[in-house]
Length: 168
Image (cartoon, rainbow, N blue to C red):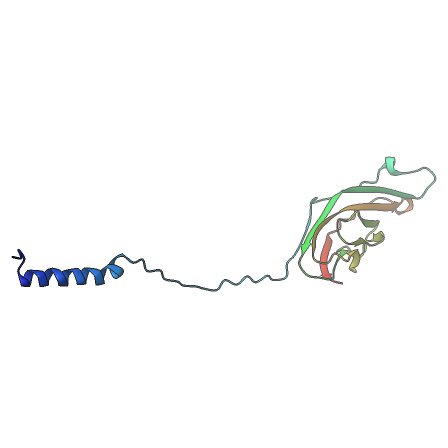
């Protein structure tokens, strides 16, 4: 004789079927996916910096040679730093001083990238200082030379020098 009644057996049977059907739903791990787009946009970057704020070119008796009208002094404590991600670039230089009393020459020394132009006398017209810097980060020492003639007398010129990275 069976200790379970027919209705009890049926109940356990349906319970077992229900649990077996529920098992994949109850214990299965459901993984969802999602996505989105990340876009990196690189704009033209052009940065330039000078590591020294003020250069003083003081012509004194120590810079003069007896019997010569021309006196000069040099300074190469300044470093020009730049970075650009655009191709075919150069660095130009100009001064804001329209009518200087004394000449100031400048040359880029040992640039890490590009080609230095020959020494130039500063003017308000932009002139090429470094050519072929292309896509680069680089540096160059700058040598400034102040030139005065004894016959010009004394005075002070104050230049604001502008460096510009531009298309070559």
